[in-house]
Length: 304
Image 1 (cartoon, rainbow, N blue to C red):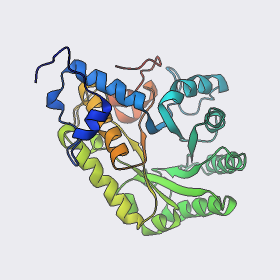
Image 2 (cartoon, helix red, strand yellow):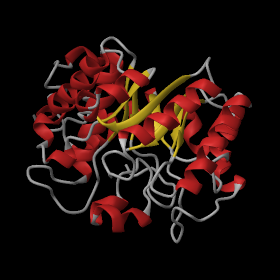
Image 3 (spheres, rainbow, N blue to C red):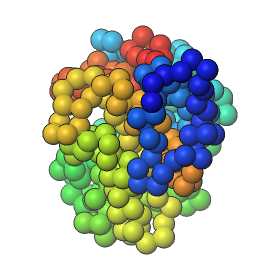
Image 4 (cartoon, helix red, strand yellow):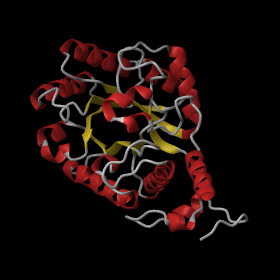
C-alpha cells in the first residue's frame, strides 16, 4: 500500500490487527508510517528498559557520576515502568537509588565473573541496596554460565546467599533462555526466571523474529514450571553487520521494537528492552553492531 497523507496508524489500531506469531503486517506501512508508529509505541510506554551506563570514551571499570545517571534516568522516566541495571559498584549503585527517587521500579543486577574479590563487592552492594529499599527484583549474575566464568555450584552459593539475606525479595539469575532447561538446579534455586531472548544473535530474519522470540520465551517459561518468567533482554541493532538472515537496519530495529512492545502488552509478557542508549565501548565485545542497540543514540537523542 502506498503512503496516503491522510492515513494515520495508531497503536490501538495496530494492537487490534496484531497477529499472534506474526505480529504487525508492515507491508501496509510506508517508511514515514513506520517512524510515526515507532514513536507512538515508545510514547505509549514500555514495561522495562535496560539502562545504558556509558558515554563515549567510558567503559565498564570506569566510575560513573551520580549526575550522569540522573540525567539519563530523567530521559527514560516518561517511557518506562522499570529499569534494569547490571552492576552494583563503580557508580552503578546510583541507578536503583535514583530510579526509585523518580518512581521507577528496579531490577538490580550483581555482575559476577571470575574475579572473586569483585564478586564479593557486587554481592554485598546488592544486599545493601535491597536493604535500602531500592531493589524490586535481584538478579545474581548475568550470563556468567554462558561465559563459563563460574560453575553452577559456585553460582548457586551466590544465589542462595542473596536469598538468605533477602528473604522477602524475588531473586533470580539472568542467562540465555535455553540455559534454564539445561540447568535444573539453577532454575530450581531461582524465585523468578530471567531470560535473555535475542532472535538477532541466532541469525533469524526480521520476518520471523517475533515467532522466534515467543518460542524462546516459552522454552524458558516451561523450564520454570509456573514461576514468573521475564524477558530481561531483547532488541535489534539499528546498523552494523548482518548475522545469517538477521540484518541490522533502522527499518528492522523499528519493526522489532513495535512487534515486541505490542506482544508484551497484548499477551502480558514482562519484558526489558535492550537497550536505552547506544554505547560505543560495546564494539569490541560484539563487533560493529554492538554500538547500535539503543532507542536513543550516544548523544541521548531519539533515533527516529
